[in-house]
Image (tube, rainbow, N blue to C red; front, side):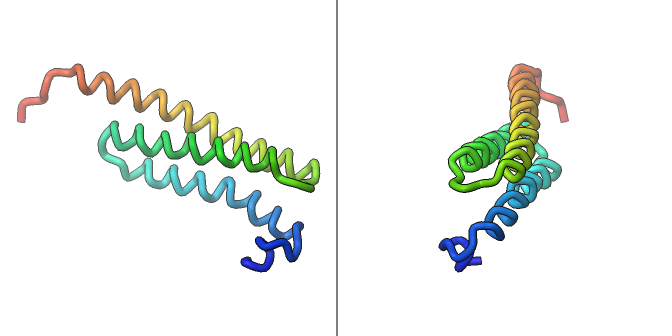
Length: 106
């Protein structure tokens, strides 16, 4: 992979990085499943937003990326970006509500 990343061949690197868009975003989703507090879910969602935004940027500045690869990568990154933004909004609202709620006796 080091040789490919250094420019030995552009084609295999494109396929590896396109699949990294979805696999890295799914890793953030797995972390969301085990998070127990809303503030932690907000933080994980923020990581997902930043990560997907970086992928969208990277796809747009990628030199010599073919049109089908560009479309695939931008669609995948956009889907994960929109999902992460939605998750961030929902968990932020829930976190704010939990701050205003009276403490649970226990």
